[in-house]
Image (cartoon, rainbow, N blue to C red):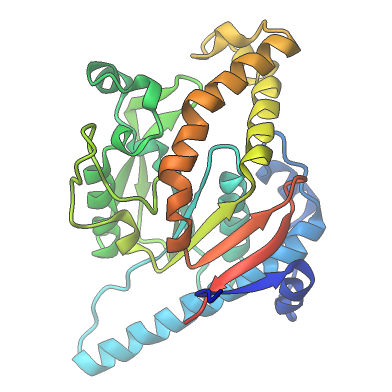
Length: 311
């Protein structure tokens, strides 16, 4: 069957690293990986270094195109950031992918300033979700203030000196009303979230904008894995959170801190089956084919193959 993608197995992909230097340490990697992810340095050298090389080539080509356009127009318009979107399910490891790429890309000399924004900050506050009966649908397309996210990205791509994004607290499980993240014309902006490749809709499933979030991306990545593996990772992470974030009395989920292993497995599996699994199958997975590149993970969280869209 014909495919718009070229598929590389792990061995084929790692050879594309060429002579790209390793610019990340074991200590840094330990800080970048997720709670229940134990990525080795081999994962960085085999998967993420070739990917950072590819992205560096794209950024460089875009910068050259910018210079050529300015020469053609005879003026000097403001250079705008190269934007990378990273999508995927809850618990699939997209946040780790985003952090590793941010670190690696910032070590390339032609784009040292790399910012990372998560779309969690563009969720509606809990009070609004409660008013609309959407609190149990947090993470679904209608739970996001997509208009605000699009306005933010439009500001970034317009070359504004400063653009602000709201900040979300996983501890409070809500937007922090008095905090913002300020983005000041980075060379590269990584935008990570469940919804970055989706069509913007409201609580009635009506399309709210003719402009999509992905319209602002120069490159997009989908982090993929079998649903059974993702659910296992979600349950494992939930159980680990009992002794970390959930143990904090200020945590929204503090009530789960005292659950036994059996109880935690039952609760996490229920949440997956009722919310996250439904959201994955209905809203997230259907956007996979819109990505420029797909990272396909195996059961051990390691990438087994890479799909790159043909030009």
